[in-house]
Length: 523
Image 1 (cartoon, rainbow, N blue to C red):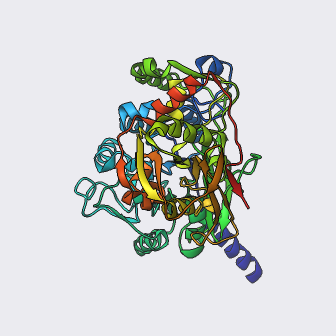
Image 2: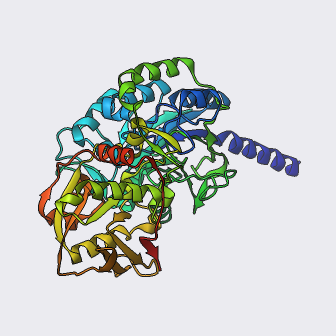
Image 3: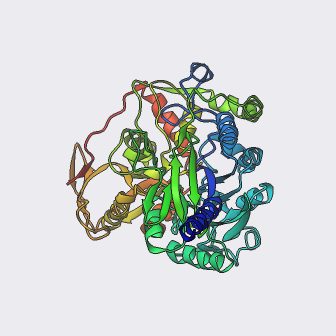
């Protein structure tokens, strides 16, 4: 009898444990970058004809359908975003954050974190967005107390009630956002590990044992945060446009990628995937099981009719600008970030060449473009202004200045200092060529040699000589870590728009032939 009672007691305990399990579906997006319309395989615009033939991906209308279907599969889900809804197409140029807010409200987002591009137009536009959305916008590693527009608008973390349980959500943004965007002088950014741990400790003290970090900090930083903090269950990533998947060939790791007890997910970018992570927690808040994968938003996902109609309406004012054919390309022009942020690439050469060509008659001999400013590839055939604006969406202007040869070397050193993290500071160049060595520590002499154009050939750069350089106004003012350019002599930041420069240059080439020529070599 005693044995039977013991067995019965054990069964009761087991049943109690089973009912304590809690399963949550985390639906997630990141780095949407105003891709409200479907995109091509190059992450650029996609024609209505190609979309009708099922050749396009993403767009808000597909995303709306996929979210509704995913919610129907789960009886307990949240929808979160890893930042960078802003910037990337004419939709943002025209509507700023208003259309993003409208679409996110329509789709019923639970929360999002602040991406660096949410600061592209300063605190004012971000505040307008925050005031419009129906969900919290989070950022734990920034002090906004001195910025009146944001001080009462952005929270470090929030606790939500979901399916009878408390979930803690924490936001995270790049520590170098002051170099990447325009947060202004009143916002400061801090170490992500310390910031996250501080919020985890607060949430834990409140009795919250299920904690999700919405991180716009990149896959490398996410892994560091997971390894160096305690109490974080899930990190929903962004910023590095990383595809984590158990099925996709190009995936950078499994979905989720586990670091200790923390599950990390990210779903590439541009609305091309909807992340769907199913997580089971025990009563103590520990993860006991995970499943899921990013769902590709291809032609097999039907477009929600109401959303499609609203985006078509919003596109009306943009159509005349972007449908204009401005050039022709003899072949696809490679502009993918996975290429352009680590090596010489076709789009980088095109943009740098165009910049230098525009101001060569002013005595400018060197062009340096940040790869983070190149946002898409272009396919072969007719090139529209819409495609050009998708590649160069930031409304940057040409900026010229003078700097020493040593300053140029320092700039290139900065440019190759974060290749391992695939950062946008990687330099695309014209009028010079250089060799760099990844085995050398960052900022310790990775740049091995620099040659500058001299007549029909190249000669070693003279560190003591003065060179006239062209870049864009963002980089000239210290963006992407190019702080040495801020002290450039005779600076002029108000040249023509970079998108106009590129369109004019391509138009003058006839059918442009993309190329690389070894101007950037890795030792």
